[in-house]
Length: 454
Image (cartoon, rainbow, N blue to C red; front, side, top):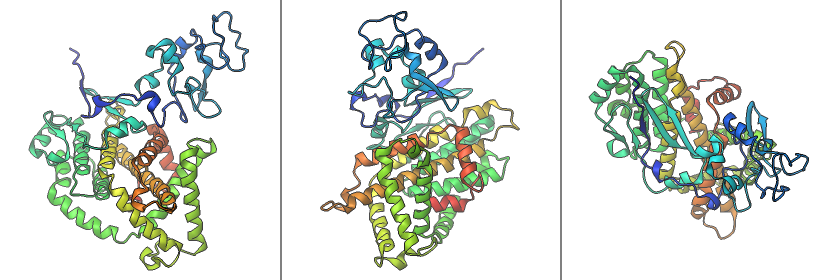
């Protein structure tokens, strides 16, 4: 007898609604909008709306020659193949051709929502289908989603313990119940680890950076010590072990200069932006921060400052010293968005840390822990690049006359860069692996590099 999958979702999920024409960064521009095969077949039989540029007021499929420079013969003619998938062909401004000036969709206005492709229908919703349940979540590439995370802590449902929700108020749930549940179903092991990481990132007595560092350290240890048991997982995440780990991490971090972190994050941002800049994407957001990043890189080279040098030693003496002063001011302004950033990171962990396909593989082929380690690395890159982008944008605003430094980091700017960087890092799993393999000496980082960028 086939059992119905249980559907679970974060508590904020049902609050989402598309703000359509009011959206400050529409999802209808500057990225690949996939068109599934079923939609493309339907589109071959549908005329472009007469509101499309160059399209006549009345026409039929037989009457449309397709010779018009602007008007396609059918909706499918507005698509093309790119990187192996069919996508909507964007115009010269990298916008969807169906997007009207009022930011509304010409297709929806003419034919209703049913005409849309699967991507356009579901975004920013995301569904992960496991054997016994489905997980719904929302992606941070949408400004309206970011708005939902601004003022209250979000709660995630527990897979391991059916009666629990994961929030900072119940950071340490009943260990024995967790362990007993996992022992009955070994597939729950990955979910047990995820729930501990969610709880750790929701613990406001620990900084965001400390929670990330502790989570990655434990993931690495579990990855290196496979096969693992529920008891081992609980031991690593126990308050006693975390307290010892916190002390060791504080000592280790003291050996990494802020200049080292700053320079490495500067390089990460520039590297991530290369292809997008070549294609002219996100120019409004990337051009000012990349220009500022390159400016600071030139300062370091011109003044002979090297990685590893103590920034305190140059405090206020030159441009690099002034940069250090600004970095500390920025961190104070950045800290005011702690709740938003915790919600962002926890949502990324919930939605990306576990791959449903791994549970469909043979045991010897699946490696949930490797995937979890790689995803934590990718989440760290996104967080570090968002922080770096905001610092560079903030430093430009702080330079303007009459703008207090603490006021230069406004919410709209934070939301913009969270959305843009999320879209830039919204890779498929295979693409994430390829990027990590090509960009770093080792696919699996050592803890020291993770600590360097965080």
